[in-house]
Length: 202
Image 1 (cartoon, rainbow, N blue to C red):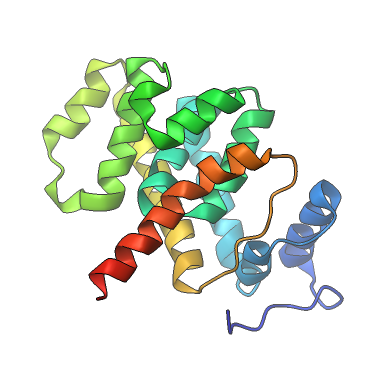
Image 2: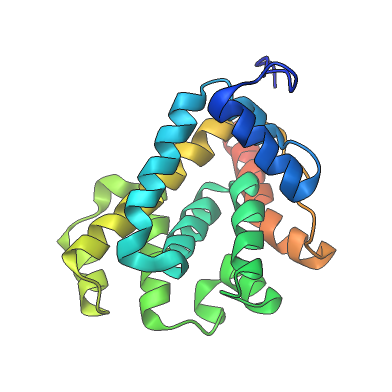
């Protein structure tokens, strides 16, 4: 990564809060936090967007949309970070989380959960082909119009954040508190995406 990031001793305001949150939680500042601190107003706006999305769909559905999008994109940063959040929040156990990232239909999820992941996947990989049938599937499993919009916003927001990190070649830090087996499972989509890119690039 060639972007110069703010020095820990010079940050103020929201950027300082970003750094402090990482230090309090993990004892160091993640590379993705440092690069987002280059424009702390944009990061703060992203957090405001997330706070506007979560109330209607709840944390579990938000994390499913997030993991579904990050999985489709191959974002190791977000798979590791949100995998840990989901694990610590008791949303999934380690085995279920690993299966969710590998094959959502093998993770013993409710049909509504699978619908969210697959909607986020398609939004992240082929949004131009989406039509009313994709929205209808979410409605059929019980989501309201507001919730459907917020699921789309959650997946779209993850695309914004994850793709920015990938585009800037931000290093992927080790995330404390995860077993080696779960780390390998969470990083697998990113490794597959890189392999595919190498093949496509000749």
